[in-house]
Length: 232
Length: 339
Image (tube, rainbow over all chains, first blue to last red; front, side, top):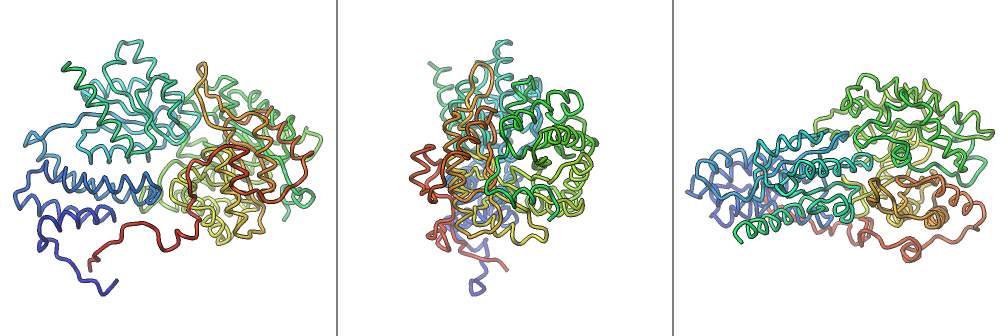
């Protein structure tokens, strides 16, 4: 593709630039994406508008292609890297400008499980959708989830497991929440390769999320329901 | 070839491998979140029992309790420095059980993924991965494993690193990947890709194939994908006994012994030589599989429809090997390239 012209991002109009940022995000081009974010901010776009229109739009495409088996984990992780770069610029500005918040989530892999690919994808997609996420990493005993959720004032607790030997631990976390009377304080989402919807129901989670894109959709709809309940 | 598995393969046209490790250990009291490998030392009697389940159910080959026995995984349990030792003990117990079987039973030293993502996308370097696999391989070799058995791998880089580590230990090996994402591995590897990957290695495995994943039907579609490439190398099929469900406080797989018996003969007909189960496959499943393999005649290569009718629907309509996917993948094309 050497015959293609080298594009100068700053010469594109807003619409073209946003389209181009979708592509750059899709291809995991961090430097280009960061440049795009900066250009839009310089043109007077509100940080929240950059997030929702440029980044969220781009991540939605990545999420859909991941869900449909067109993209796989390596490509999505590259996109995640680019997204992270863009978010690093936006995050402090979003806080400063008091942008609307979609919700707050604590996410981690359960005790005994080292795999964090899934939860990193979810973290990125959730942040891409405007949620604030505290990722507490791998190998989390029940206390880590509950302490982090309290400290972070989370709306959602997300648990991930990649092994059939570790997935039952999710039930221990949920049972402990029930014992301590905390279960209704949080939306509990679970995910991971060996899980399924029936498993999620059986252990008492609010939902099983097949992949990161589904996690975002589920979180949004359950948050909306939660708000409706509060105002009802 | 001087290893016991290659010799056995010369005399037989199918071998029965073993079933589940984790599921069986849970039934013996393993707590979720604890490292099964620590039991090699704390409860050798239970590990012996686990191996005996397989041998007494007719398995020709069983895997050692060392799946998570690499430094990266054991680190979670503050036992990262004990990878070699715990792997060695797992093989020692296996050697003892196999030698007392009264027939040839292969001790296959299980090696699972590190759990880390490799460079450049992740943080684990090739050199570190090779060293981790080498360390575990040496332990399994010292303990008397006949061959090494790499399983549940999703990244080609990790598969290559393990092969290199095994070469350093001078051990013959088998290797399987887990095809759990629309017929591909999590990292996007198709069955056809794996055949290519295996043949390009300087020390290719004795046998290769698929394990775990999403269910018996999907696994057999992957086996068909391997054999469609015309591989001469023995193909391994180790599928889960159905889908995991949570019943009365523990994980139960919904596949019956009858279903796994059908799965075993279909796997053989699809081109697999080493056939076993993975998660949820208990002794009663293995007994039914052995009986089916011994008594039912070979049939022609099953179609996808035959597989779905016998074992249930596939989790996805495609598995990435379709001709129409070549070159016409619906990926977005970049409109721009920067200098």
